[in-house]
Image 1 (tube, rainbow, N blue to C red):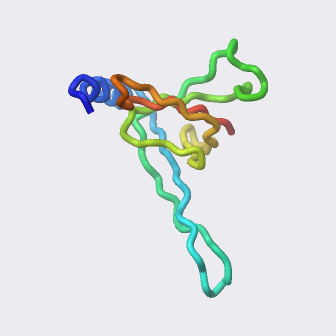
Image 2 (cartoon, helix red, strand yellow):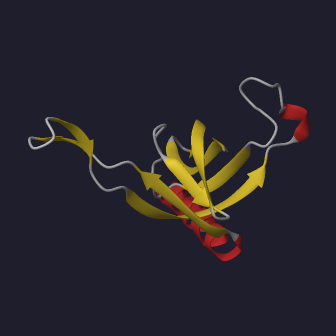
Length: 118
């Protein structure tokens, strides 16, 4: 990572930590074989804190298919890489990840815009 990218990631993290809200990324536990049950079961979920701020999607962008009314965009720093199977928890509710957009500086990830839906 270049020094400039590292500095920009630090700025993003500092601002999101200062002005953001309590947001957690919930990653499903690994699937393991349970010999007693004779089937695969999921392990415990991993909860990762995010320096992030959830904001509503702009009304003009709603198209009814890829972006629906009620969707939110969680603007998070680039420290934790989200995955499509993850859930995001804020304001006492869990939201499903429907789209992930990487924000780059000099080909280095400094932030993630995560579109979520209830």
